[in-house]
Amino acid sequence: MRSHLLNGLTADQYRSSVIQGVERVAAKLATTDRPFTGVTVDALSPRIDAVDLEHPLGDTAAALDELEDVYLRDAVYFHHPRYLAHLNCPVVIPAVLGEAVLSAVNSSMDTWDQSAGATLIERRLIDWTARRIGLAPTADGVFTSGATQSNLQALLLAREEAKSDSLATLRIFTSEVSHFSMQKSAKLLGLSHDSVVSVPVDQYKRMSTAALANELERCKRDGLVAMAVVATAGTTDFGSIDPLPEIADLCQGNGVWLHVDAAYGCGLLTSLKYQDRLTGLDCADSVTVDYHKSFFQPVSSSAMLVRDAAALRHATYRAGDPGARRPVADRTPDQVDKSLQTTRRFDALKLWLTLRVMGADGVGQLFDEVCDRAAEGWRMLDADPRYDVAVEPALSTLVFRYVPVDDTDPAQIDRANLHARKALFDSGEAVIASARVGTRTYLKFTLLNPETTVADISTVLDLIAGYAEYYLGSARERLG
Image (cartoon, rainbow, N blue to C red; front, side):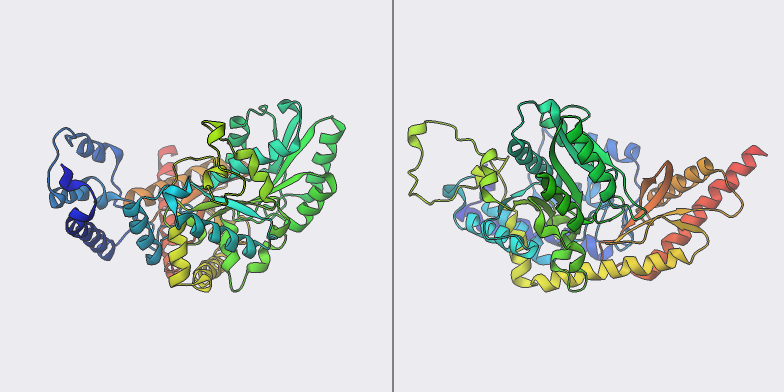
C-alpha cells in the first residue's frame, strides 16, 4: 500500500494519476451542453449505495470510470453560461492550478514550522486586500473557510470589544435582507434569541439609515448595548449595497463596531469601472471578503480583515506548557493566533497564482463583465411586460417575477414561478434560484459567468414564461 503514498518514490505514479483525472474533467467540460442533467435523488442514490466501499477497485482508471457514473456525469456545472442560480462562480485556471499544488504539498497554516513560505504569502495577500479596501497599515486578517466563518469571527471580536457584563444586553443591527449567518453567529456566540435587530430596507433593498438611527437610539434608551452594526456590500438575494458612508457615520457617532459583509461585493475591489460603489468600506472595523464568490476562485477562499490588528487577540488561545512559549523577541509568525481554525489549508495560494498570472485588473475585468451583463438583463426585463423586476442591480443579481396578463391571484402566480424554477432544474436546461420580496415569490439570476450572454438570458426568460404558462393553463383546466 505504500505505493499510494505521495513522495519522491511515487512521483511518476502521481503524475500519471493526476493527468488521468484532469483529462476526464477536461473532456467533461468540453462536452457539457447544459448545467445539469436533471437526475433525481431517487435515480442517483441507488448508484452510490451500490458502491462497495469495503472492496477497492485497485486501479485509477477503474475508479475514474466509477466516478463518472456516480458524480461527474450528473454534477451541477457552474462553468456553464446557463447556471444562473446561486453565488457560485466559474473558476479561473491559475486558481485551479493552485488547488492542485496546495493539495499535493498539503501545508497546514497553523504554525510556521508547518507552512514556511505559505504563511508569508497569506500575510502578503491580507495586506494587499487591506490596501485595496483602504485600511491603514495597522490592519490585519486571516483566510477562512467562507463568509459564515468570517462573519462569526468578526462578531466574536465585536462581542469582546463591547465589554458588556451581560451577553443578554448585547444587540447586533443588520438589514432585514442580510445573510442568515448573522443570526447563526449570534446563537453560537451565546447571545439572546432577540439579539439580532432587523433593520428595514429602502426601495433599493439597502439598509435604511433613518431606521438604523432610530434603533440605535432605542437600544440606548432601553439600557442595552449596541455590540455591532453589520452592513452588507452585496446582499445574497438582491446584490444590494448598504449606504456605507452614512452607516459608518452613525457607528462612529455611537461608538459601535461596524462590520461589513462584503462576501459578494468584494469583487468591486478589483473593478475597473464600479469600484466607487464600495465607498465607505474603509471605515469598517472588520470586513468579510469571499474570493470564491467574485474573484473566480475555487471553494474555499475567503478572509476576514480588521482595521486594528490588536482586535485579533480575542481569537488567540495558547495551549500547552506556558514555559514552552517563544520569547517575545522571536518574530516567527503563527497564523493560528489569528484564526478560529487550527489545521487549515493553504487556500491563499489560489489567489496568489491568479494575481501573478492574470493580475488584479484581469479579475476586475471579468467582474465588470458580469455587472454589465446584469445591467443589460435588467433593461431587458424592465421592458418585458411578462415580468415584474424587484430592483435595479447594484452588482450582478436580477430578481424578477413572471406575471401573466390574465391571472391576478398572487398565490397562484407564486406557484407558477416556483413551478417554472423546478421545471427548468428538472430539465437541466438552466439552473435558477428564487427569493422572497415581501410575502411574494420571485425568481433570481445571479450572474457570475462572463460567458453568459444576453441571448442566454433571453432564452431562459422564454423558458420560464413557457413553463409558468403551462402550469397556469393546467390549473385553469383543473378548475373548470
